[in-house]
Length: 499
Ligand code: GLU
Image (cartoon, rainbow, N blue to C red; front, side, top):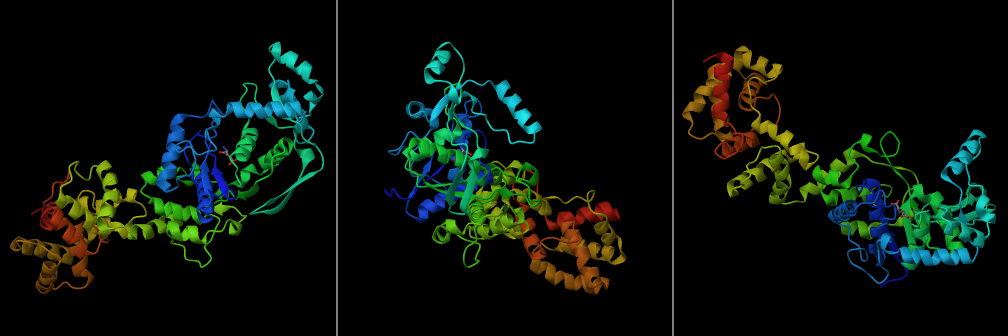
């Protein structure tokens, strides 16, 4: 095992995995894989009100779906476990005693109301609300007496309150912070549970984390954490803060921009390899500009030092473009299998899939694949084949059918179809010559009515593919039957021309 490169992804199981966190997980994972290091999954579940087992389970499932598996974690205990913070409470307690003993931490009895009052007064005076440090002077014996008497207390870290703190960030370079802007952070809450900023330091140290790679929303926390490392005499890891993932309007990505949960992308039919590829490009660009990359290529090329400092815009179109590229690498059967659940859900496929249905589906998916961004778009794309209704036909189409050529061409086509035992694109090619001669209609006056009479639409799939699919599908057992070409033309003749 490599002790030098150990990274961790430390989600709080308080919600579903969203793309911002997934990118953090991915960059940690890439860093570890590339450096032949170790990746750790640590569940930060000390917020008892908000943490739920179902979220932890789902987080792990979503990470696995994306292809991110961990060397150490709650499911595969390594030598630095347990990897769930709620199972490490005794460890934190031991360090709290040390800090209190060394006088680097103290009990604070200020009530929420008192702190809120101070906060408001500071804000009203145009100052940053920073804890005054009022309880620092309470002697420990006195504090213990008050606690024994039933008073509630938190434990706070004693910080310098002046001077500057500097650290080097792998992505952002040298950073410097004025310590008078940081009050004494809470280490332990009144319920005895450690605050995030405290548990994270002890865990990162004991788990021998060498590089802490996380979102830049944690930069101020890093300052508080470094002060805690110093108080505990722990060596510092290397920090790398990733820029935030933004929506196209440059505000932090949220549901108002579209899907943000990894699970939603999965449900929408984005391939995990495409999302993996896209997330890697959020703030990082491969050196040679080639963007459609496999997992192995990304591991090879990725460089945390080349990750951009500016916010990464989540571009849905780009993700869909990559998805299409990754879909192309699938076999016809794999594509059909990805599309099938969406078509089943939309009631377009029967529960029982026969081999002939699978074969037909492979061809249909192949014909329509260029028209979809995600597999969830297939039911809409299938309407091109299944939705043939004169009542719902568009005005433009109806107009075409009612022109003189429209009428003559459709009626002649209907007649000729009666003579053909089997219809195909080759048959159409043959008979359209005859229709042209018989009706005297040519060019778009010939082809538009033919297209509308067969498909119900003035534009859409190429006719060779369309005819093949509806003719071969018409004999199959779909929940809504697929009409073949002669049924379509007869319906038009009956409903539009009244024959
Ligand atoms: N549990 C924290 C979060 O989900 C972890 C942050 C960190 O990586 O330190 O934001």
